[in-house]
Length: 182
Image (tube, rainbow, N blue to C red; front, side, top):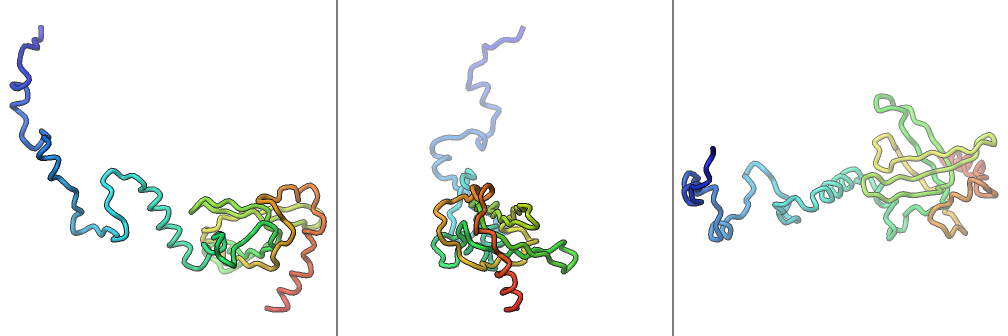
């Protein structure tokens, strides 16, 4: 039968000093990144990885939003989108071709979720309601233009327009005016 009579000191004698942590060793050990790794100066090194996904998400938003897309969802920016705005979204049909498709409609919802921010645009086409949901940082979105600022909408989500569209979807004149400008 196996015996537990050996003392703790005898069991630890085979371990080398680098595996045994003491208060003196813990105080002087700090992490230093190797020379091959570039650490951004604006962020302090975090050895535990806390907040790492937030940091990565902010970096991606900064990279994808270089063309001004981030300003569309920034509430403090004067050109920001608001529910009720009439928006023209131009998208690429595929990455390999230059063919584009456009969709004009009323912005009924916005989801501000960092890199996964999206907007929902609704229009009535041939008496059928059509909604399109676009991811803001998608590489297939070519441009987003505000055709007309929304007035008289006091809600963040305009889902009630699905049931009672009223005057919100009379957009034919805006399309003709946009084509005349271009």
